[in-house]
Structures are given as C-alpha cells and as structure tokens.
Image (cartoon, rainbow, N blue to C red; front, side, top):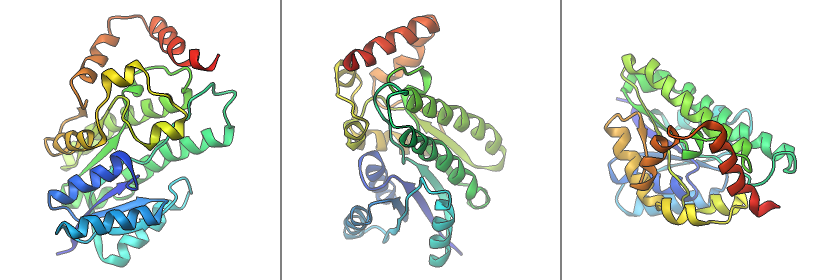
Length: 260
C-alpha cells in the first residue's frame, strides 16, 4: 500500500507550522513546503523527535510557475501519495494599491491564488483515491472589500469562493474541502504586511496554535467553513445587516487612516 502524506504549505512559521504540528500529532506523515529550508528542517526535526513519522522537507518558492512540478517530483521520489492538501502559504501588503510595488502585488496573486488553485487541483486524483481532503487557509477578509489591502482582500475572496465551489464538486467523489477564515492572527504575516495591530486585533485575536487546532477539527468533521474563536463567528452575520457601501467606507476609513 502506498504511504500517504499531508502536504502543508507555508509550513516554516505561523499557522502553517502549527498545522504541521497538529497533523503530525494526529498520526499523519507531513510534507512541509516553504522557501526557508532551515526553518523547515528545524520543524521536521522537532516533529520527528516527538515520535511522529519523519516529515518530508520540500524547500520551494510557490510563487514560481513550476512549483507544483517540483513538489510532485519530490513526493514521487519518496514513493508517497497525497491524502490531504493544506494551502496555508500566503502574504498581504498594507497600503494603497496604487502606491505599493506592483510586482509584489502580482506575486501575492501568484501565491495566494494561483499556487493554492494549482495544488488543490494537482493532486485531485490522489485525494479521490484516498478519500482525503483540502484545507484552504482563507481569512475573514474574504467577506469584505479591503481598501488599504485591496489585493489581499480580493485574493481571500477568491479562496473562499473557490473552496466552497470545489467542495460542492468534490463531495460526491469522497473528498472534503474546508476553508478556515480567521481574523487577525499574531504572526510574521503582520510584520511582512506592514500591519500594526489595533483594536480589531485585540478583539478578534486567536493564536496560530488555536487556529490550527480548530482548522484540523473542522476538516475532519467535514465542515464547509471554520471561524476560529468566538468573536469572529459573528462577523459574517453582522455584515448582512449593513449596506455594502457602508462596509466599504468603514473598512477604508479604518485601514487608510494610518496612511494619511
């Protein structure tokens, strides 16, 4: 019988690293993907030392068009097949879209959208064969327009829509698809985005470890969407009570005031 693995991107830090720990703790052999080989190796050693199966380390830049080919080749060389795909890799940039670096924003689309889509589809035959699943890390931002982080919010709207539609398509084939939509999470993401935590972070804040645990439980329970934390669960409901124009103005005022 072919050995199965859970493929986890963005595994070098934050939610991705915590997801790797959670999957490993529940008996999954994990394949870790991120750019920073030293971080991946350290995490792999930690997981192996805990008594879990030795992780597969795949240093890879997912913004590159051939990234999924590299991953498939590395997994093939190990003689394993994918049971779960966990798309955590992603980043955001805080500021007005017209003022931010255009190439960096296009790179965000490559990572947050193209790579996530590619990996969700690349191993579909293996996921169906093993009746596995896909966990996509979205954001509560996917429910909102995002002046001040326009491309990031739009990318997470794609993650949400794509995950829900793919779930409907793959359900009859025995594959579960779950999207997790956390609020602000204290991690390297915020520093890279140039984001300064404020009142919203204090209210909606959930640790990366708690997000990972809730995500794993949700995937195994075959939930469509996971909202980690108590406060974040109310956000999609509250958004229905206000006109879209009001929400747009409110988000823009909140996020852009630090840039004026």
